[in-house]
Length: 362
Image (cartoon, rainbow, N blue to C red; front, top):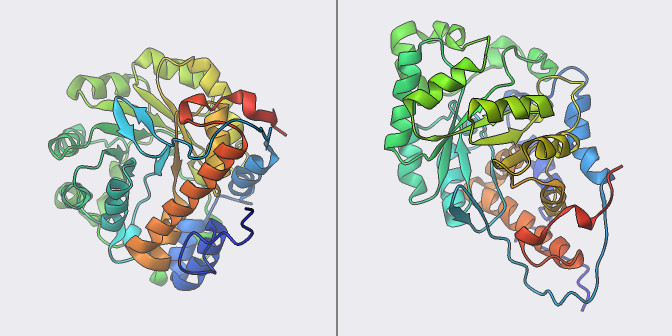
């Protein structure tokens, strides 16, 4: 029987991620709203990350004998119950006091993947304890002080993080105008304990100067030489960069335009994905983030060729709307929407999703 009143949460006004976004904007402070929601310049890329998904059209299929599609998948030998997880988002306490702890709990309960930001408002040790047996990766940027960076990486390994995610697209910060409009007195970042060693050595005012502004492939060689953790590059958008990453020995790639916060003229992540997937040719996992607002968007990214999909801002909206329960609501909505769309396109497992379900890309 057709059900025209899908309600995946207990709140009838929070039945999709757009409604989570709308409500969170009324809950978050002016500063937090600006920090999490901003794109760069005219926010063209921010908008197109979303609209590009809407331009992809799929083939409905019939008589495929599918009633309960299997959403499980694996990355680096780890089995996950969902093909989507949580992208690194800094300063989650700005959205809810439990911040990254709540996010880690839901990732663990849902048996999916969380990437913890270097700018987490809870230490990587605390998040490890709260997240239990869940699989987590640690995101970081290159520091000028390599000794402190190596120390941080070792802490991540000692606390069960299985991979490093290196953000490689932020050698210079995009012009984020929503943030620029906020009075400096209103801007307040909660403490980021993963930077404590930096603060003790260089002072709070010296932290920004410790991020390496110029990156090159020799840094990946150094990184691979000090740890046996998997190394994933986040921010790869060009096929030639993907091939260079392969040559440098990276273990995985995340196609990302930084949520539209960097180059405003960048193409949407979903539009960049196919070129990177084809360049890599299945040799390492290719993942993506940017603009995912529906379970159908997850399906489309998997169909184009992503091995895994990450969500960023929706986690923040979930935290703002209800802390841990809010994040659970976001996950439940995406899960149900993905189950529906997999059933309607005739694919019973994540492994069977391919470009054959795509009718057109624009």
